[in-house]
Length: 169
Image (cartoon, rainbow, N blue to C red; front, side, top):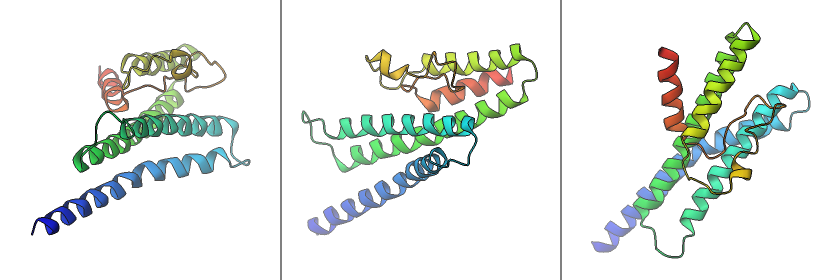
């Protein structure tokens, strides 16, 4: 009976892991395909590059947590890490879509600058990992040649909620 319970737990963890990776992988694959599509507009490809970089960063941080040799992770903890990665990917995607939508609606240059500033400020004010490598996580932050001047180290769930709250004001 104990073996059956262990096997059932492992199957559930595997199923959760597989499901949680579906959103992450889908966003990654779509973004990577756009990035590599030479027929696509340069601005769209730059947005895709940012998405790929954020997803790679999130995945790296997830793998670092999984490979932490100071503790052995339970199936529930592994499932949580994958679910967190999946949720961060989804909310990053939503955050960027909202950004593009708001930026596209802005008519005047000062309005466009205000949209960039709001999303940019929210991005840096909600770190997920508190990564000390500021040069790396802020690689896009002061890049005027990219619209996505956001931190890679962002808690996209909280940042998304904050931007939506500010837009309702």
